[in-house]
Image (cartoon, rainbow, N blue to C red; front, side):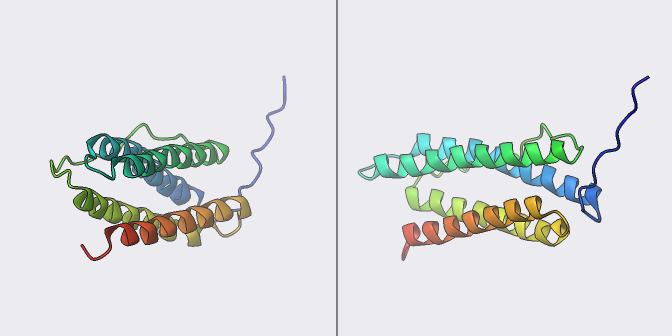
Length: 151
């Protein structure tokens, strides 16, 4: 009979809470894919091409983040969620309005990443991944604020 090897320690003090929060983030990122793809489809007007490209890049990045978070969940012995946070349809497809919706979504993502960060102590790989996501999402907030300008 083969011996079962022990799972290596993750270095995390509260692995269950970390897994719960990673799954919440995965849910949020997966909804970001839907949100940003929808936004890209609804843009009209003279600035359509660059704005559509930007939103599609955001959708791709959200999928990349969800994938990395899911991989981290499984590496910690967890089970990635199949849930997707509902994306409300406001039926307001004005570019500035959509950017303001996007800004609120990005702020929520940064908040979730920042809340997870202190729980990552002891696992450098996870901590660095979350720090990178905090940086990326914060840069998105700055970019969206510039895009909104004085509106």
